[in-house]
Each structure stands twice: as C-alpha cells, then as structure tokens.
Image 1: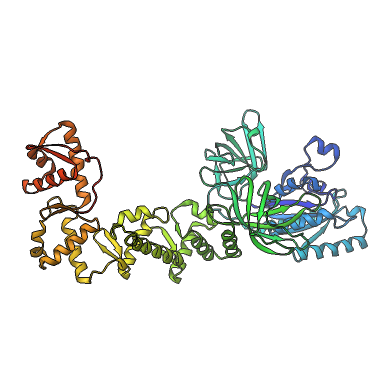
Image 2: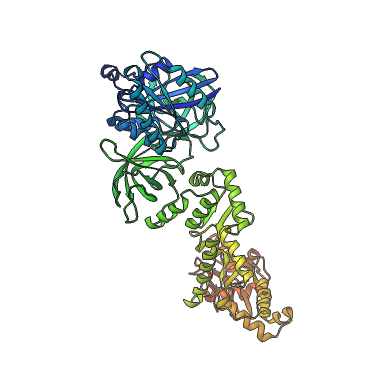
Length: 637
C-alpha cells in the first residue's frame, strides 16, 4: 500500500479543517476551545484510505499566533496541501506558509482553492494566476490546482485522486541508521501509561526496544507500537507512529522532545548551519538572537556571523549558539523567525553539530562554507581538514558527518585513490594529506627540539606516542614514525628514535649503534664493553664511542667496569628487590642472585652500582634497602 503524509498550509479561515473533514470524514479540531471559537489552535491528526493508498493528514493552524504549532506539523511531510480561499485569494499567511514549505524542502505541493461556492469564475481565474506566480517563485512549477467546496462536495473526489497520484510517487525505502522520532504529541492512556506520537525520521522501532528521550536522556522502553490505530510489531521511517513507553510519565515530555535509540545521538548547544535568507528579509547582524524552528521543537539561538551581516537573498554559513541543548544532525532543515506577523525570514539546514569543541567561530564558518552543497567525499575531506584524524569504526562518525556507513567507506576509497586521504595500515583510521604533513612536521620538530632544549636527543618511541596522544591516536603516530624513518627524517635504533637533524652518525655507524643497542635491549646479562669490539668486528675506539653516546642519550646506564644496562632493565631489577627486602631486611648476594636469575659475575658489579646510587646499602656481605630504591633509574655515567 502506497503511503504519504500530507500537511495542510494556508491563511486562517481559508477552510483547511473543513477540507480535511470533507476528505477524511474526521473533524481534526478536537479541543473544546477550537470547537467553541471555530478556529484551529493546535495540530490535528487523521488519515484516510483510498484505493491502494493510505494518506496521513496533519492539519495545522493558520493564525500567525500559532505558527510554532504549524511548523511542528510540517517538519516531516511528503505532500504540502496549500489551501487558498476562492473568495479571498492569496493572503499574508499563504505567502509565509508556502515559503516555509519550500524552505523545509517539502517535495510535493498541491493547491486546493476552497469555498468555490462563495466565488465566481472571473475571481477564481485571477486568484489562480496569483497562485501560479507565487508557487513558481517558490520553486513549485506546474503545480496542480484543484477547485473544491467543502460545503457542496464539489471537486473533493478530484482532489483525492490528485493526492493518490502523488502518493504513489513517494519513494519508500528502508532507512539506515539509529532510530529517531521528533515527538509532536504525548498523552496518557488509562491502563497503558505514557504514549508519544510523531513521524519517524530515521530507522525502525519494535516493541521491547530500549530508547532515550532527549534532551533529558531519560531511558525508556517501547511496550507497544501502533500505526494509525493498528498495533504492529515494527514501524519504520516515514510513518506516523504512536509508541507506548515504559519508564517515563507523559507529563515529563513536551512537544519538541525526541525519542531516539539508546546512546545513538548527542544534543548540542553549538552548531554550524547554512542559512538561506528570504528575498525580502531584513539583514541579520552578528550576535542577533532569533527563534530557531526545527523538527518538532523550537528555541532561541544567537547567530554568530563572524562579524559581517547577512543580507536579504544571501546564502551562507553561520554558527548558532543555542539557549538549550537540542538534537541537530547534518541535513536537518530549519527555519528562523522573528516575533510578529510574517516573522519567518530564513530557511536553511544543519551542516555540523558535534565534534566542534575548541574550534573558533571563524574557523567553523569557513568549515561550514565548504560543506554547503558538498559531495560526500568533499564532506569527509572538510571534516578531516578540521580535525585531521577520523576513526571510521566509531558509529558516531556516520551520524556526525551525515553520511551512511557504506557511503563513508566508498568516500574513503575515492579519497585514497586521489591522494587526498590516507588510511592508516591495518586500521580504520583515516587522515587527510594536510593532516599527515602537519603531524609529520610536528613530530620531527618535537624530536629536534629535545636536543635544542638540552634534553637527550634520543627518546623511546612509546614515550613520544604518549606525549602526542592528545593530538592523534597511537596507530597514526606509529605509522607516521615509520614513514619518517623511511624518508630519512627520523633515525630509529630499536625502540629509540631521534630527529635526523640532531644526529651526525654515518649510515655504517648507525648500523653498528643499532646492533650494540640490540645486545642490551631487555638483557639482564649483556656482554661487557670489552667484548664488544670482537662481537661487532669493530675497533675498540668506535664501540666505546658509541656506548658513550648511548649513555649520554639516556639509552644505557653505566654500572662501572664495562657493565651497562638499559634503564628499563634496572627498573625490573629494582622492582624485584622491593618485596625481597620487605620480607627480610638483610639479604645475601646469593639470595639476590637467585631472585635476579643472574650469575655472580653480573650480580657483584650490579650491586656495587646499586650501592653507589642508593638503591641498596652494603653491610659486610649483606645488602639492605637503600633510600632511593623507590625512585626511577635515569641514564648517565
């Protein structure tokens, strides 16, 4: 069965509610005040079936005073039904409501000229010409105009047939992504409790699903799903749906709240948006507070333009600072209003709403300009230029960028082929070419700066990764390090690295240096320095020089008499002494030898060094804990 959601629009007292009743048989004015005054104050909901078509209808108020309610009703409709009275013609709210439909990008439009029984042919022809001029200017060319009378029933069947035809053309497809439904109604049903209703924007819902109410982040569970009065197992995007919730009272929910899949969306108070100023709109200045209408809610926002004013007819990016937390996602349509009649002055869409922390307004505005009318690949590149690194395995990335996960993967492949994007090997992390260059430069400068600041030029690669963790993930830093080593900008000797600019070793010396360090890396019983010339087949002068270099850079610790250990091994030996001395305050060399798993040839010089450094104290043939046993070992002589 084909399905569509139809939303009425038009000036007050042009016959919207009467037309809906003539089409559906339902009077959507349910409030006592509405029936007493004969005027729609809030949204009305109904539906009707015709042939193989089901059409949900949202009837909206026409009075300017209730424009917020109108905006909540047309936020997610498939067909706009613009109602113009045949005896009055185009009026103030006719123009504003049509501009709203166009700004919200409602795909289909039908015009119903009502009250034909109160007009004449000449008047209706003039009004019809006015309507066509108005709709053409709004972007709805060749719109169908049906003349009807709700009183006599004339033209109602033709209008119904037109709506059926448009309904059959509405594409219905499975909506990927987490569930989202802006709430436009909440009420309590005896014996069931809280019920919320709205149009599902994204995803699917089933009984038993765990959800959240935003912005309060209240956890709820779906007890029952209902679509147009029929209980069903599931409901999907594009359908008017009522959900019975467990875990919340309807009094804690208001229009504008949203029901979303648990832990799938984040609210924000800062976002980047595209605004499209109406042709007759007064300019908007930096810092101006206006009212934002989007989804089923509204709230005040401060418009940050970066200093410049935005003029009538202009299309640009700005930053919103919201008075309260609100759910906004890329591509979400919005409207801006000032108080008063015909107060809508701009439409637009959300460009970005999360991942913007720490970014300056000017940077975000330029970022937003790159996102306007951008392809998915261009969107990914713009985000990478902003934050340099993105992990595609993070489910939030698809939501933040407004790109489906499968499309995101395609964009990444396209970017890699063009050279604008790099994918870190064996990971889901991507980085832009600009980000790769700037991070590589930063790493080299950081390493070079160590020698300039009087620090040891060499450092453990793990230490560098830890220092730069706030800048980029470990996988990115380690990948860039290897690239820089291959390019010759960094010298790596086992786990030790330094900037090439801080080193003057030849390639052959680097090879010997690396071999020497490998003999000490993690070794408790390394060779004595006197044995190195034979092992390396190099002169004693060269091996001694390289060992001294390693000591000066903190890569080895000189224990005396030709014995050297890495700081890491010394820490291991110290950590094994601490519990030994706690158990018994005095220990023999033999006891320490057994714990360390070393020969006496190594234990004696090692303990003599430990005595000098204050890690242990000698008393005849025994050792006790020294005052510095708890301190970390450092490199040096």
